[in-house]
Amino acid sequence: MRGMLKKFLLPGLTFLLFSSCTQEKPDIRVVCENSGGNYHIKWETLPPMKGTVSIFGSNNPDSFDVQLPLFVVNISDGYKDIFATRDLNRSYFKLIFNNKYSVITAERAIPMQQLSNFRDFGGYYNENNLQTRWGKLYRSSALYYATKADLKFLDALKIKTVIDLRSDNDRHRHPYKYNATHTFNLPLRDNPRLKSFFLDKILSKQMKKNDVIIGQQDNLSYIMENNADYFEQMFDILTDKTNYPIVISADWGKDKTGIASALILAALEIDREQVISDFLFSNEFINYDLFVPDLKIYFADDEVQQTMTAMLSANQEVITYIIDQVAKNHGSMTQFLENEIKLTPQKRAKLKDIMLYQQIY
Image (cartoon, rainbow, N blue to C red; front, side, top):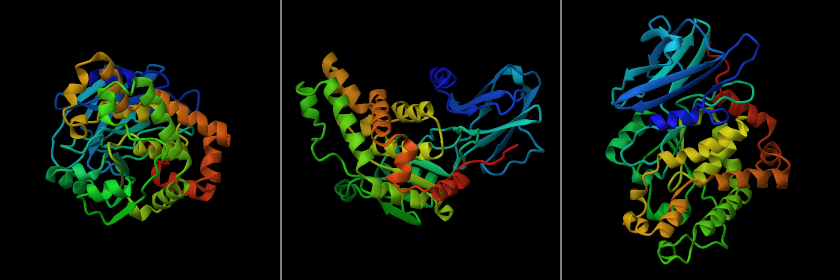
């Protein structure tokens, strides 16, 4: 997990970016991850700051007692490890630098027993330096895979609404086990001209790595362009604050969920690099043993392994292709959202009001 941290702190790939509004205001980058049973919270300030950072904890991302810090450490330390209690209460942290600059953070990927790729939309910064809220919106693989412990954790997160993007056939074959207050079925259409990536074709080498990449590009681009009605319904759900907290789920939680996530982040004015990084982040947290039986047999041959890895991965060539196609066909993502998905400026303002911290100092 420590290797992931370096990637997030690189320019252009940073998930949590606190950009400067004035010349005096520093950029502050913060990452929270689980490392060896602890929360490893690391920060960087640009330019380097002197002074102290106060760290506050809460089980509610919207409420912190800022009179009682957990720790006060030197900014120059660059990190703090905090013991992680693994109970049903999720931990959020507020960092205040020199009693002036504040950032809220949490563990983005939430450990579950069998819910793969379960993670929070919180902590991204948009072009206006507003941070997306923690504990409001989640993405996941199909909730069909949830164990009893996973279901208890969903209850503890107070999940009120499920948006299921799977096909009707998948939903009937693998019904969800979580009884949310609201469940919306939005069966996103796949490209009918494309066959499924049959595992026997990969094993027999009829399908190569490049075939998988092109197939993913074609299918996910089709999903983006041919489900405006379902995406419009999705944003109707997301712009009703009474529906939160919400989890969006589908299959492995990387493709259809990845497209939906890209649209939501774009609607919140999160930049292209963070949208791409969010899509690729799935590669760190999908348990493919849940989805592919006898997975090891696909790694005995190098060529088969490369093809299988491409099929199992969220590939950068895919998400960049989709973003570029939207720009080519519609002028910009904003025009696509407004003209095709009917996300009016008024609806977009509602979404921002729900999903962005307006002031956290």
